[in-house]
Image (tube, rainbow, N blue to C red; front, side):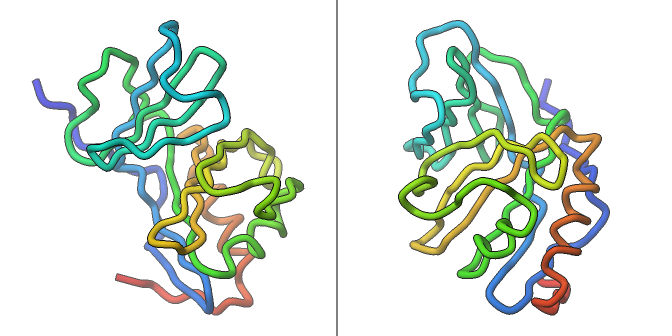
Length: 166
């Protein structure tokens, strides 16, 4: 039986502003594989041949993010339990620094890394995943806090002049 389509917890549209874009990408399939020797080390990210991401989610956990059909790997489907937002653009780090106490500079948070951190009081998994050499972050949060995270980012970036994007 096919997996039902993921319905996002975020009611706002994708938006863009000067130097930054925010989009809901909760439709990514999210499968966590536990117990087996991890294929990617904790805190690191690998791009898979199928275009998906393998996240070193825990010391014995890998979270697989894929487009389209769920991953064929045996694991637990977290697609409906996590909201995923993508924040991109040359000013994405500046916006995040307003709501996150982590040092997001390249030496400490380079591309292809994962950090678990509080972001405006929310427990967030922050994944640095640059796309086509542009700074980009995936932000994963429990579904029940998805709208709150979206709203916090909109408020923190209000001066960038958000407008709905396609």
